[in-house]
Image (cartoon, rainbow, N blue to C red; front, top):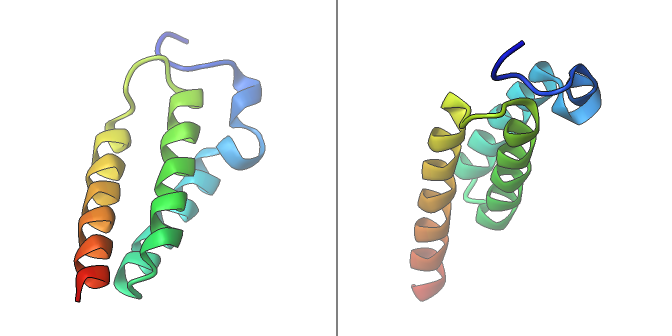
Length: 80
């Protein structure tokens, strides 16, 4: 299977359903302005996506953009 890592990487937290749930949780953290939790979740998502794909997973860029937004919004909130 070209472009897909070892099948054992899809068990547990690297399972696509688990990563999908983590993506939803990161969005919830963002809406609740829980910036640090959202950033940490984005890091876990990106790591999981890298483990299941040899090339950049399509959701990796989107998750990185969300992380950048969380950092920016968190910094702005702290500056107030």
